[in-house]
Length: 139
Image 1 (cartoon, rainbow, N blue to C red):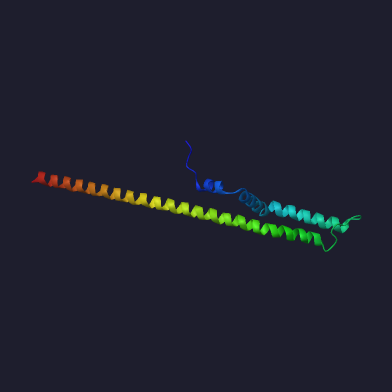
Image 2: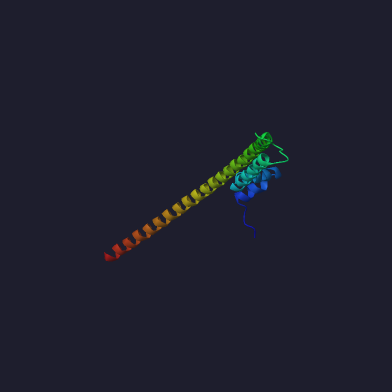
């Protein structure tokens, strides 16, 4: 028997192909692996252009490299914002599910409290009844 879907599974099913790609890009660009790899590529780019004896494809001040970074930033920013919007939606869904769970728990606690009070009243009634019987037997 399949267990009911939690809010993670429900949200994952609603993601479009573009949404999944945006999340993957944001996860990749927000990692140390990306920062280290990009740093290595920049150092190689600059190094090869500074010491290249035959061919300099991007001489100092590395205008092509700046263009590459500008293009990367122009595409990265909206993609990361799309991913953040989905994260906000995910957080909202999570908060709603938590709220529903809290309401259900409150109702169950109230029902248990009423049940415990009725049990206490029944016990007290029985104790009073037993005390009255004991009192009548003594007379």
